[in-house]
Length: 357
Image (cartoon, rainbow, N blue to C red; front, side, top):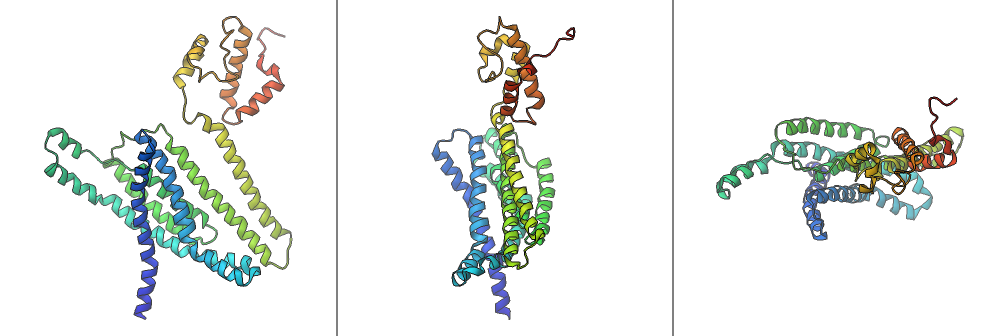
């Protein structure tokens, strides 16, 4: 009995612990590879690491490590009886939730404890000034507050969100453990950002937020695909196919399509201006349109004309109306749709004067 308990503890904790240790070493290797690629700036290294570290975890931690047992079981039994594959999906896939629960709890308690204790940084804070820092400047640099590692922390939190959200209807208990994880890290980060971290050197121009949204969308897509597959599996197992069973497949498919359209709309409306947003140049052109030649990136197609700007006052009025329409409806309607409507209905670019009848 004792051997079986020890074996259960060993098989439940050790794989998750080894996986967490390997994942902690991975960012060091990825940073080195990004440097070898020739990435010049530290901010670009962090932004690229943020993406690559997340997708590496999604593939190797979530899809490979966690689903290996259930996929192998389904494949082995399916070779013996191909007709039972659909029956095995709803019964075997939820079984991998145990590994997810173990991994989430391990990161929740060990990760939060490591974050609040800061043992390595605390030791280096006292060791470096004694051994290596001999000048006042080096002593000051050795005692500066630590910086938060966004590039490795955000992908890990996005992975936990993916695990909790994708298993929210397969094994709802995963949500409770994910809530514990985010609750602990909320309390820890609230203290750390108030009293410990110094993030003055983290400069990305807000580019880390869109990447976090994209990582969140990965979890949404995976959860919706799971829901659709589970509904299809239940329909295949049900001998009495009725309208309710068909609707249970149609609704997840519609939700998936709406998510795809929403994602395309977000990319079309916001991604083109996410890297370069020359607000100062746009303001100067708005005040003095003759400066448009100085800012070719601001005056794109459909904006202010550069050649006959001084003579064509009608064109200037049309461009002013066009810019007002872009500013009013650009966040709601894709720009290509606005251009199509304005080309089909050009009178929208000719506002009536107040003294016109």
